[in-house]
Length: 483
Image (spheres, rainbow, N blue to C red):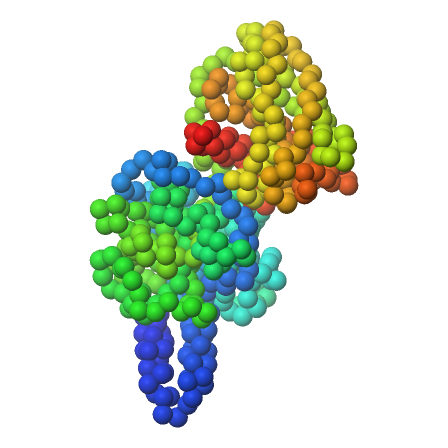
C-alpha cells in the first residue's frame, strides 16, 4: 500500500508541470505542485514547527572518532512500515531508537528484538504526543516533531507493540491517549546537529561528518531529512550521492534512524520505516557523507537510557571527597559575587586539597558548549579522614558569557585525574527553586526571585533535557584536551 501510494504521488509531482503547462500559469501550476507536496509531507509525518533547536549537545571533534566504520544494525528491530499515516517521528524515535537502545543495554531485549513484546510501540508514542503536546503536534492525522517525542519518552515512557499494536489499515487520530510505560523511559536527549536553514541565526550547528560519526560511535541517532524524487524510488544497495530536487521552501520532511557509517563507502547507514520489500536496500539506505551534511539532513538527535550511558570510566582509588555549595550571592552591581562551599574527606586516608582540582563552572542550560570556568580552587590544606573545610571565594561573571539561562556547578576532580570512589558527590549545582535557571546578561547573574536550591544532580528531574554529571565532566575533559 505504501509503495503504490508513494509511486503515485511521485509520479504526480513529476508530471504536474507538463500536465498544466498549457492551461495554467506558472504560478498556478506551482501552487498545485506545492499542494501535492504538502499532502505527501503530511503522510511522511515530520513537522519542523514543533522543534526546539536550542537543545544542543556539546560538540565533539574529529579526534573522538576512533574507527573507520560502525554499525548498530544487529541491535535494531526489523524494518517496519508506517503505512499511510504521518507517524515517521514515532517510528524513528520509539520503534527504532528506543528499541535499539534497549537492545544495546539489555541482552534480553537484543535476543528478542523480533518480538513485539520487546519492540517499542510507535502508535503509543504518537497518541501520547498528541494528548500531551497538542500545541506542538499537528491537529490532523500526522505531523509531529522530535522534541515532543523525546519529552514523552522522558516523562511518560512508551509501551511495547504487544501492549499497543499498530495496524496500517485504520488508526484513530483523536480522542486516544497513549498508555506510556514508566519502566521504559529515556533520561535525556540532545540535538546533535542542525542545518543553517533551521537556525534562527542562519548558522549551522554541528553538521559535520566527524561530529555525527563521533556520536554514532556511542549509539544510534535519529535524523530529519529532505526527500527528493530519487530517494522516493530508491531500490539499490549503492550509495545515494545526490537527488534530483531539493525542495527549497516546500520540503518533504521525513524522520528516520541513523544506524552506522562506513569510511570505505564514505556513507552513513539509515533505517527507514517504509517496509523491507517496497523500498531501498531491504528497507535501508546508504547516504553519501558529503550529500548528507550539505543537503539531505537538516537535523540529528540522540538520547540516553541512563546516565551511565555516557559515564566516564573512573580510576580505582580509596579517595572519596565531596563538595557542597552553601551559598552564592552577588556583592555589587558590577557582577562581583562570592560563593561559600565545603570540601569533605569521606575517604580512609588524608588528602591535600591542592592535589584536587576543584572548579566552579558556569554553563548555559541546554547548551553545554557555552561554559565558563569561574575559578579553580588552589587551597593548600591537608584534610584528615572525616574532616571538612569551609571556603569562601570571590568571583565575577565573565563579560563574554552570552545572555541566557545558566546553572553553576562546583566540581571536584573534573578531569578524572585523581579518581574518586563516589563520583556523584563530586558535584554541587546551584539552581533556582525547582531547578529553575539563573539569567545572565551584561556580566551579571540574576538569582531566581524564589531563591536558590543546592542539588547534586539535575538529571531525572522535571527539567527536560538536563545534563548528567558524566556529560558535564566529559565536556570539561574535551575542553581541556582542545587547549
